[in-house]
Length: 406
Image (cartoon, rainbow, N blue to C red):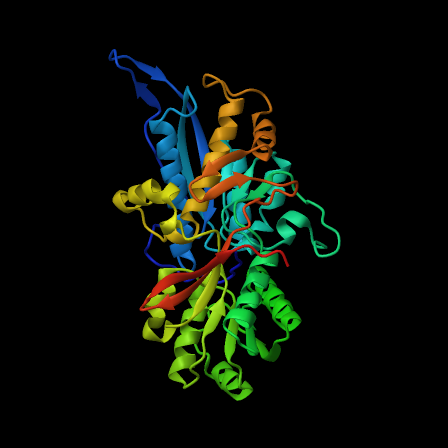
C-alpha cells in the first residue's frame, strides 16, 4: 500500500513525534540489585493522525507489542528495546524528514514502516545511505524492491529495504481473476486517486481484467481529499458497468460507494488493501454491503498463531486497526529484533552494527504470527498469500484466500 499527499488532522493522537516506552532502561534482578541495560530503539514511521491513521496506528501497535514481548522474554540479553513512532501524516516529505531524524539517532537500529508506498520512495535513500534496515508491513508498489523497470528487468534499488507485504503485481491480478471468474463481472469502471499505490494497483487490475476477457467501460481519477463524487457517479451510471474498481484509500472510496449507491447504481466497489479497514464500513454504512477488497496474507483473526497477539492488542488499549497490518508489523519488528540479537551480544553494540543487522535481516527465516517470514533477493516477502474480503452483514468476511502467479 499506499501514497497520500493530503491530510486532515484529527485528535486521534497528538501530532509530532511519539515515543512509546516499553519499559525502563534498568532491569531488576531477583536479588534486589539492578543492572544497566543497553537501550535500543525500533523506529516506526506511519500516519498517526489524519487520513490513513486507523491503519497507521495499527502498525505502531503491532510494533509496540513485539517490543513488549522482546523485553518481557529477554529476547536479546543485555538490551532493553523502546519504540519511537513518528507521524508522517501520509506526506512523502514528512516521511523523508522522519527518516533523517531516525538515522541521526544512534540508538535506532531498525525501522518499521512506512504505510504508504509514495512515502517510501522518499525514505529509502536516506536509510540506505546510513545502512539502516527498514521493513514495511504494507508497501505494495513493485518498483520499491524491483526497480522502475520491474516488468521487464528487475533490479533491487536498496539493500536496506524489505517488506512483509506482497506486491500489487500479485494483488491486482488476484483481484482481476476473482472479479472475472468468480463474480462473473464483464464491464468495469476503473477509478484511481493518482497516487503511487492507487494508480499502480488500478493499472494492474485493469491489465488482468482485460486479459481475462473483461471490458473497461470507463476510467477516471479523483484527488485525495475529494468528498463530492456526483459527477463521477453520473459517469459510472452512464457507462453501464457492472463493477467499479477503485485504486486508492478508504478515505475517498467510503464516500464514493455511498454516493454511488444513493445515486441508484447498485453495483459493488472493489478495491485493494487501502480500503480494508472497519472505518470504511462504519462511514459508508449499509451502502458498503457487497463491496470487496483484496488484502495481503490470510485473515489474522483466523490464524491460531496470531491469537495471543490479538488478545494482547485488545487488552492494551492501543488505538488503530490491528487487522490490516498489525500482524505484519509485529513480524517486521520481530525480524529486526532477531537480527539485532545476532549482532549485539551482552548489550555490546559493535562497530558497523547497522550494516551487520541488514545482512542478518536478509537471512531471516522464522514462523511469524501472520505466516512464514523470509525475504527473497529483492527484499520481498516469500509469503505470497492473498485474501478477498466482502462486506457481509456489516463486516468484512473472507471469501477467498490463495496465491496468484500471473
